Image: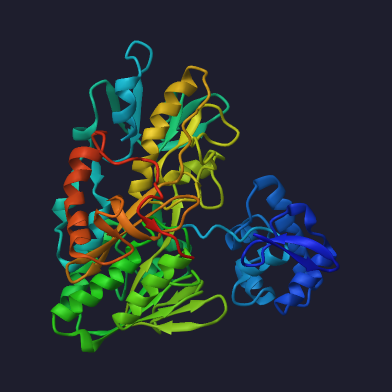
Length: 104
Length: 396
């Protein structure tokens, strides 16, 4: 756990840079987070990110790629196009949510 | 295990217990891994369920259509309904080859699985006559039951082909949706090293989209392709379908529960134990076992209207067969990843954590006896159910 400065303010993050405080996130910060991992946010990206934020509030955990498909209506294939290589991790990072469970 | 623990502590005057099970056979599922290599015979892993049900418990052979949580009834597929005061869901998880396009119809040819007795037996026949080529050991999606099993399969296959004198004719590739060989950093690093030592290639971050059985390749969502001569896959694992039909499950039919008490979220009289819940722990027999100590205590308090004051910590303890008569052991929980050290006595062992030894292998072999004679009948094992940091070496 640590504190970093992003977008001119202090943000709490874990050792891998995922935000640890739900309320420290806003959509401007999402743009910065996305740039950090080489993604330029479009409306399609933001629709997924907003779903993840809403879903976290009701479910208490970060949606998996399967859940983004079934409950969020964005196919896994599309998620891979929007957030290449590691969609689950990248979506969580940009949405300011914990990394989805490794599921040991 | 749950009824064997609960029956003695629930008064027979106040409580009847009924088990609904569609089958009449209990499987020693940890044994399935060894069947493809001829170490176990299929008849060594099955026993009649009835033999393990204590007196004072009714065993009903029937299929559940759905649970009506509003009226506290379990509705069977023949229309009968069973009323309950408390419901314990223990229907585990099962492999679903049909969840991946092209997989189910390819099963049995060059595509196999070992998570069912039938699949493991078919794979034994296949391996006996196989002349070599590219073996791909593959995991579709996490979580899966016994997450170390596919790694063990790769290690055992390497030893099997070496013993048969045909290792030079077999290329082994381990394909996983995870970032590395395993989930948590320290064990993932050690296990990746062990794959490399054995000449097993690792292909990580591979999320399968489909199987092309004609071209003999698997294709990922980001359009990577891996060819195979023999594919041994762990299909998507899901909880029971009646859980979904009852509106009690998540996207994979697992029941969301409080991880400390296993009480279903939003319900006061439904618990989910073993692999059936969504707790962030391994779907492993050891987790089911360790959780039982806490569950029994908490359940008895809950039905008396008292607080459930003995939280489960997600303790898991898994033997990993590594081939050539050796094995290793990992010990971890919700918070602590698998680390190196000694178990169960700090500094002494006799088992070594996250390190190969012959003794660890014998621990796994002996576990078969322990399972049928100690665990299933609900007898206490002289091991603490809560994980201990004593005897573990910190590293990250």
